[in-house]
Image (cartoon, rainbow, N blue to C red; front, side, top):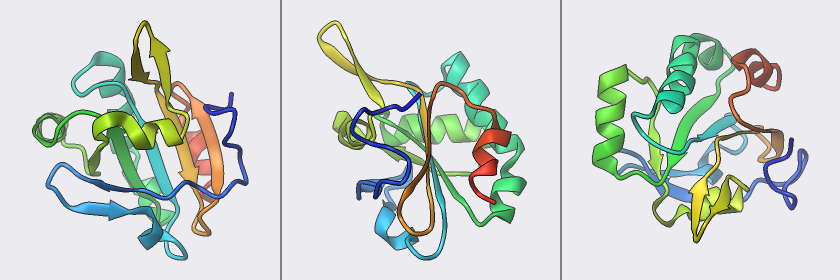
Length: 150
């Protein structure tokens, strides 16, 4: 299922710059021509489903690294919350702070819940050329994500 009716596999990925849990800014444009990027949009730090999903990525990071992929978790939590989540679960990848959910919205990873936009669990793979290579809602298997990185 495509997370955004306006964003499809093959489209140019929307550009963004977001800080990670340490305040270091990641610019998608800096990965272009060098690395594929895996963005895992998730609703909340320390929640059961998000913990399962991000720990599964952690457990297979060697496979992502062998494909030169940069992996990022993305949600609206603040840097302190992200840092606690990383430390508690030994996550070996940065968690980006999407305050205001603007990047999540660009990637179709939000949905309306009453009067609030909430982050919808979604995975997006951007190839080294800056194009969307994979879009899925929910918790796709790492093996499915990795297929797009070969």
